[in-house]
Image 1 (tube, rainbow, N blue to C red):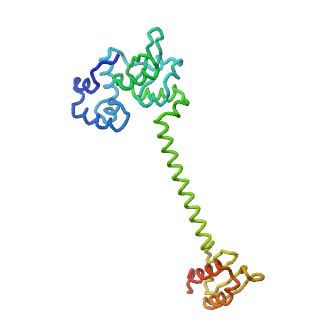
Image 2 (image 1 turned 60 degrees about the vertical axis):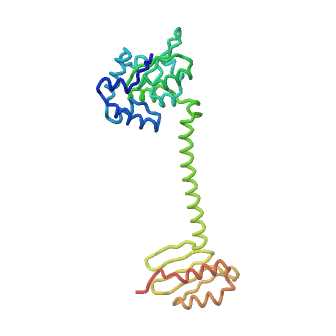
Image 3 (image 1 turned 45 degrees about the vertical axis):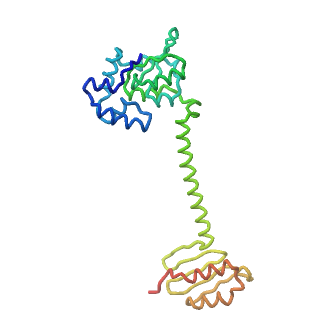
Length: 267
């Protein structure tokens, strides 16, 4: 079983790292759930092989062969999230002794061992195994279950995903509303080689490159449809002023806005 001597102390004794390195790794460890051995490997201070060598010698146990040791009967004894959280994999159960054998990145991790013992009711026998082998085995051998959904780790992940989705939907909705009001106010504008066309409120105004303006459409309070060609903007403005009682308030505002545009300049 796990001894009281900590992993950092063992590695210092072997001359692989210094106390300053351990202190730095412990500060990193505070910000997450990663094990000290994993952090030291990722920081580049030790290798997976060095970590396993120290743990194996300390325990008097060779590194475990997951492929040979794994018993499919234990695949559901621990949820996937707990295996991933602590970097461990259930291997087999010695039922007569009520002992659960598990492969661990850090078999001296007392927090992980206590959590697994409390969860399963079995005494835990931790055996060292490489991080990558454990991660691959968890992904391949441990099924996803309902327990993985209703746990704080997954819940927080789902909450973050839901928040991002909600934000994206909100932005899409805002964009849709903005575009709707922009279209309501300005209508549809299309640019062609020799003219710019404005469409809104049952009216079409076309500015031609030669300076001519055409008005097509239906005034809200007029009979029939307009199809008028103006030689310049002044005549267009006089017409809309004289006929303003034939247009709705929205149409008049829009026509005034259109008249202020200068989409095409005369050469």
